[in-house]
Length: 298
Image 1 (cartoon, rainbow, N blue to C red):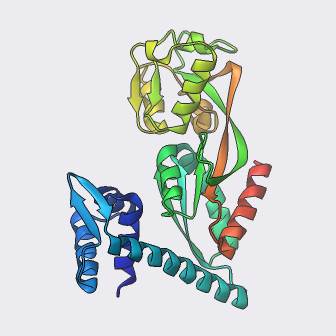
Image 2 (image 1 turned 60 degrees about the vertical axis):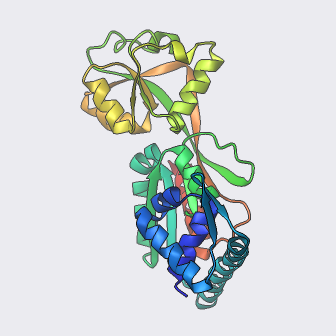
Image 3 (image 1 turned 90 degrees about the vertical axis):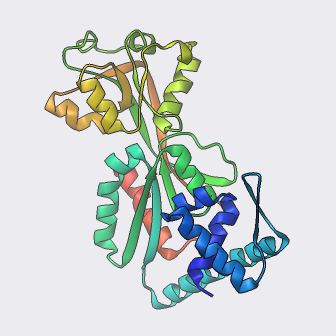
């Protein structure tokens, strides 16, 4: 039996969705369906019930899912046991990061780690904070690094560093000469923001609520899917925004954007997120230790 078939089955069984499993596995939905059908042919029984646009496990499917959980856990422990005997820090780590972290924090960190640990292969998945947390929950990545709050008590969350948000405006904007601005000041202008599910969006929404401001009352809001898109819109004079100070450092230095401190300050955490009880490979332990030291020095 192909490991790939079991991996595909395990992902569909966790998500109870062929479409979501295809996204997570970077496969087409027909390819996922084909793998499941091959596995069902192997066992000569249906593993999923598909009725009324809903997917559920059959009794046989539940039994296969239980065994697949044990198989993958044993396989990981076997690999790690051999690595401990040989003393090699190697293997493949799948890291997930929210957009701001992936674009402005991780490249240098992972580059330095790779220089010291050339035998470790790394793959990076990028999504917004909600997407990364979902990947950790479904065990499709080994470690998530996110910029927003994580409310799942079953996951282990470890703060790695603080991040400060600032208001950003074009160099000819009314607010560009101010030494500091309030949220109320910012919301008097057309606002450019990240999409729902973004950690930055969540922090801003929470700060607006704490300040007694109605987020829904903000007019002329433009929603965009990445920090780069938000910065481009602000540079073009389409409005103002609030972003991580880390993400706008280059533009501020070049003079294409002006960063204005917020009063009161708005800070948020960059955090590591992982399964609480998942067996951790030596390569993961090495990466976490390296990342902790890196964040303290930043």
